[in-house]
Image 1 (tube, rainbow, N blue to C red):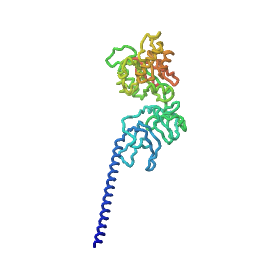
Image 2 (image 1 turned 45 degrees about the horizontal axis):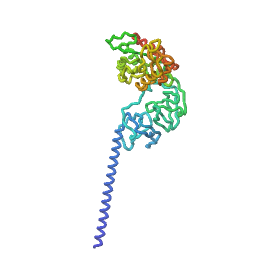
Image 3 (image 1 turned 30 degrees about the horizontal axis):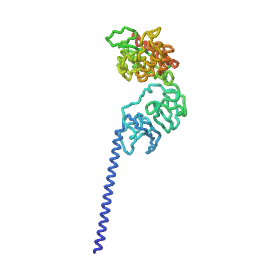
Image 4 (image 1 turned 180 degrees about the vertical axis):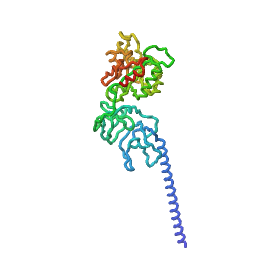
Length: 412
């Protein structure tokens, strides 16, 4: 009897042990399941947080292509590259990748941060060269001379910018450069669009708003005159360019629409009054500012480029003949000191305008030595690919020039 009791007790103990074991296992499995679900929930929350129409890469990251249900590394991308993502409403921790818009590439949610920044789309106003290039595999692409991304596969792309050692192409909805040594093949295409073979540069001075008739000079502009000119540019889709774009045009690095123009304003007096008109009609202009005369912050606008009209050499009677601007005869040390101050004040600009349209070989030499890459004069003729970049001509606009005069210059 005693032996039976021991056997029964042993069986009960074994059964209880098994019961406790399986109960414990079930509790452990339940905890693991809850932990996994919590981890997935956190991942999905982070995915929602990092997702946006525009995102910025955080550090050096990998690019992937999707093959069946697996993600294969196809390249890398450096930090601070702005990307557009495909629209995504559902976020699944089992699929923690976002698709880059208009590509077949994916990127991990962990490598991105939502941003409001937008890359410049200015290049979309240019006309592509009639050239297609095919890149080699394992090619690097650059932005502002820094490596931006690399791909293991080759691409066939249109050429938007043509430099001496590289091509500018559109990818990820922005402009990147590939070195010519990484191009496997070039193919010439049929020319289909008309492009500018010559570009006018117009020169304005002082704007006087309606009711102010105090200026009697020919280089003063009424509010009505500026409205008529600028509305013509907007309504006729005339591309208003920058000084650097004009340089690129002269060097045949970019192709511009047939109706393109560079607008310039001299000196700085009353120039801030141009800004509401530039912004209203969304046209760009370059202000050649005498930088010691006016605070550059007075002219802050995305539509106004600032360039040099000297720091303090816009003075008559310094040199013999003409109006006597000092850049034609002052000692080199004084000129270089002035031009250095001007460039430093104006964000290291490389565009210059000779005071009073006056220059000589000595002035050109000084401008080059100071680091300027383009300089403007008068001349009443258009800029071509053969134009001397240190004698860029302009059409002075006077108070009596109506919109038909501007139209004739732009469209002829």
